[in-house]
Amino acid sequence: MARTAGEAPVALTMRPSAPALGAVIGAMGYVEGRFAHSAELALPTGGAQLLVNLDGDALSSSPLKGAPRRTGGAALHGPYAEPAVIDPAQQRAVLWVAFRPAGAHPFLDVPVSEVRDQLVGLDELWGTDGAVLRERLLEAVAAGGPRAGLRVLETALTDRARRPLEPDPAVRLAAARLDRGAPVGEVADRLGWTTGRLARRCTEQLGLTPKRYARIRRFQRLLRRVNAGHGPPDWAVLAADCGYHDQAHLIHEFRALAGITPTAYAPRSPHERNHVPLGG
View 1 (cartoon, one colour):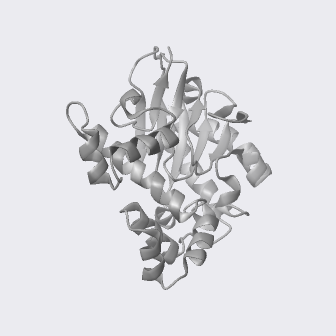
View 2 (cartoon, one colour; view 1 turned 60 degrees about the vertical axis):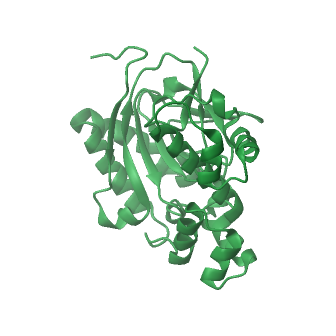
């Protein structure tokens, strides 16, 4: 049955069934929906995603400053350090993979930093394998539904791995501690590294410097709290609880990472906190 604009999206989320992929993929799934709004903000999470548009052979992303990025219907959305405007019409039927910290690294021939703030077609990254993947997924979904498509996608990722499917344990530890709000210097000391070495390893494998990654993950902690609460947020309390110096600091960081003020933040739903509708 065709879905109409404004209906809640149909969503399937699962862990990879292949044990080896569990170390590098946090979740994967399928989303299908029709949306009344014409554009939306996608907020930075610090992670990379693989996206396959099954409804049309196109994906696009436009930073608030700079030129739009357009690809075919299968692409890698690198770690973003800024918000981007995306087209809800390209989310009518999408298979997706959300990589764990440093999880995209095994599938790339270049450092993850090379795809930071980029939407890159899989044909550019993987050549012929990437160019034909969308057609294979369309056939799988037509024959067996989204779960069949996700199984094909798992196989394609396993075959594509260029490095062991196990992130560098030191970088993974660094990401976990930064995610919890540990200072960069403290994380470097814990690993017995200089801050310069930490920056190089994180930039190569996470795609972001430790400081930038920590800022984005603090922002994500804030969004989780906002969407878990009841009633209007108390921004002063949230600033103290989430590691901001004060409410003014929170507002400044919110504008930098979301492109809007905290009071203008109205996500698509509490469970889709990184999608903010724009216009009608």
